[in-house]
Image 1 (tube, rainbow, N blue to C red):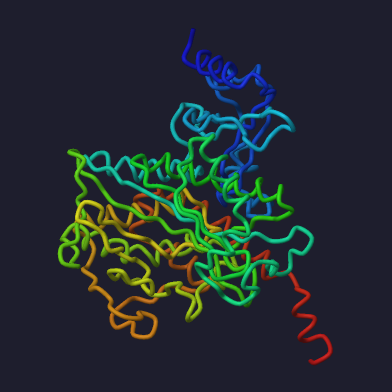
Image 2: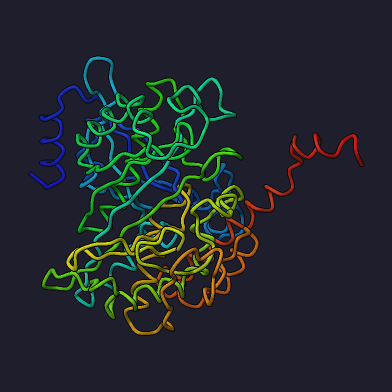
Length: 452
């Protein structure tokens, strides 16, 4: 019996009611796409993979194909192999009326010769992790994801039918209690899938919440878990008559949603190379912070991948717009939380919740690795509000055009992510931006139709 056959047999024995399996891959935008197959085909799929067109990585956020990327008509829109990631195979806890009747598994795309397909953002993350592995280093990662629960019958404003009403009320426990059934369902569903959840928090906006995942010593698996976590949130919200959105800034007068990563790095003996001593970062931590600052502007197009993303970066929103770091300072882009020496880490606070998880983590780890190589100019700690007193901190590109320009001029990130990946991402996002700005919006007509 092959490993694939044994795995499929064990899965079917554990979940005898399962009839089908969803085969899912995250595209360039982090959107899950894929197929559904009969459970009887699971052993074959696990052993042989399945074919899907590489052109799916040439889609914009709306699913429209972008030509001129080299992976559409130029090559006959040919198929490539997708291999299942067996560690993500699980039952779908929200499926079935009486018993779970569906499973799901994530995929990664390969070239015909078995090499990683350059357009798959997960493979960009693998490239970066290989650099750490080659030096006997291992990143430890935890993701924090913010999202809104919006009434499915009224998508144009946040729900106010919660304690505290529409007034900003961060950490208000009554709001969390109001959705405790949803939160507990999320925890149970994540546990069933092997996704390690931690703290839940009510954010300042009405219907705005954050659920954190625990630290994971396998950064690739941590990213897989975060992808599956978003899927879980979306589907469980439907049970409560809600739509869960990870849009960066869904409402003008409400808080925005971010994707934060906490990262530490272990050496080959399992010791954290970062440490804090009397609130002072050690040399390795300072190097990593400097590397992150050096690459932050280059990666802004990935951290903020669409037009709405840039609405997060406003004064007073605890969203950074300078490449900066500080100890226990939430105004900076990189926060070093107070911690014991063994648990010192960096919290990267720049990306929106709409960012591609794999690409975002790849950029963050690339910055850390670059800094650990001693190649980044040192950046001093910021104390106080960096947005009010930026001192020598470099401003981030805070428009879509500026961010794409910085990405195209990047000198560091292409070496880590792969230049073909960077060129593909830029081509797709530039076309998406052009399509976006070409559309005349209802708001424009409201403002201008009878005035000019």
